[in-house]
Amino acid sequence: QVQLVESGGGLVQAGGSLRLSCATSGGTFSRSAMAWFRQAPGKDREFVAAITWSGTSTYYTDSVKGRFTISRDNRKDTVYLQMNRLKSEDTARYYCASKLWGYGVGFWNGMEYWGNGTLVAVSS
Image 1 (cartoon, one colour):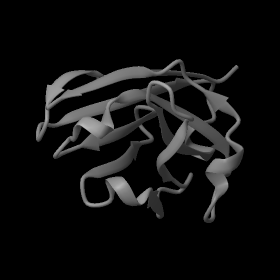
Image 2 (cartoon, rainbow, N blue to C red):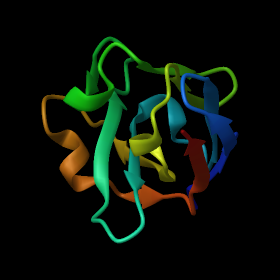
Image 3 (cartoon, rainbow, N blue to C red):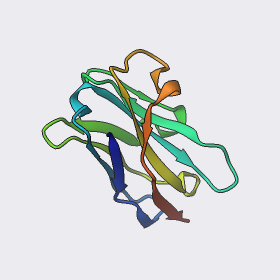
């Protein structure tokens, strides 16, 4: 059974940085595309970033391009989201998700497994 556990959230001042981690179990990580989503209070969940199972392609929503970086470590079965120059509008619960053999633009619209999220709060 695939399980995803996020960590690394917290309270940070605007302009600061955080690195989120998502540790997975279940033995499918190296074959799984991974993505980060977020949900702010009172808003719908939105896509943030994604990386293909091979790690060769990454995708970002426009509002985080140049500030966030998604990466993966197949030795540790972990995906990361490095968040720099944080803004108050980045405040949300951040979720990671996986999809076996995911690739191509838009694969994140059909993620298969989800974590419970980690809270990020950015103070202005």
